[in-house]
Length: 183
Length: 183
Image 1 (cartoon, each protein chain N blue to C red):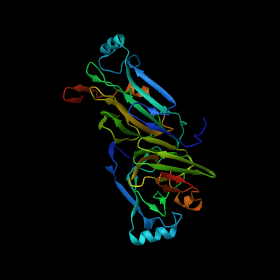
Image 2: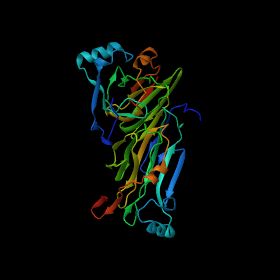
Image 3: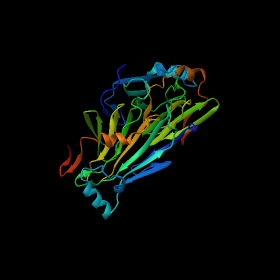
Image 4: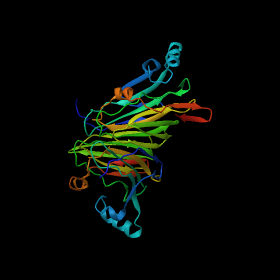
């Protein structure tokens, strides 16, 4: 793949990354098996296959020294009380960290490494550091607003979604009348 | 140096990076020879050795896979009309890119690679990509407000400030009654 030759810029908004080159979305039908109550997810999908999250990305080469970056918008919603969230993944390259910056709304960054679990509550302008080797998933804990964040990670990180399936996150996040609960 | 073992977070504000571990500032007396009118700079320094810019940084290992990051605050001000700016540098590792995100105010990101020069005007939420190999300097083009931006760069980038002295930026940025001029 070619190097990024010329400087460029995008604009971060609460809805999208203006100037993005790649767009992906994950609907309820893409999230089979990710929520604790699979029956509830399937029933929701039948009724309306809602978008759970959207990713606006800029294509730069997936190589050492480059910085991949994207804007993620997690819609508000729950599956039997469990908050909408990303699938979550590990980096294939265990040396590669990641930085998240909160743009809008209220989210929880859930991280796991072996038996260790950590959470960071994220608001606008929270800058969270995910050290190398930690699996990471993000959860929207607002009842009615999207949670939006900007991410930067090394070009040679790679993605391991399968590991997040085989070693599932041991904590889940539920919406509560007075906020949210991690359990 | 030890690896960053545990996830952590900071908070980006218009004044500082809350949770920073390292602080540096550059005053007029640190900027000898950087502005076109050195005599005017020296006279200003005699009168009041103002802060030109401040850098709030978090210590992570300067190694491949880690992501160094900081918040830079460039004060408003000019030396004989030339806007306050960072010294500017190249990365020693020519594979390493950098990302800037505007936080507050109005700035210009000036980039140079050999004979090529590029500028990107930055406002709050502009995300600018500095490709590998490009020297970069940032300039505050507001008459009265600080320009604040967040930066992320690979841990193994290294810094070459000397090259920016030996191959000086060929463009300079001046405040004008109706905005600014790059010349």
